[in-house]
Image 1: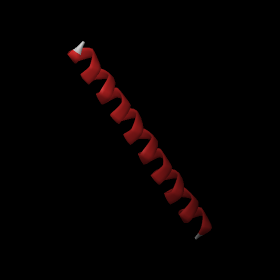
Image 2: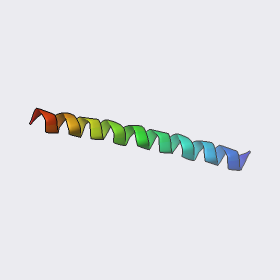
Image 3: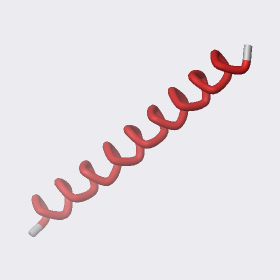
Image 4: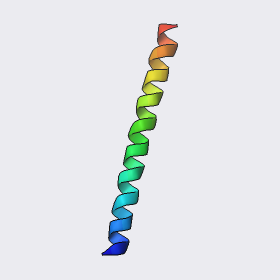
Length: 35
């Protein structure tokens, strides 16, 4: 139970980090396009 819980937490954190980086890259692309 603990191991699976830790894996689930790490997976959620990875997904959150990926989504954050994706948003940052999109914003960066939009800024570069605006310029």
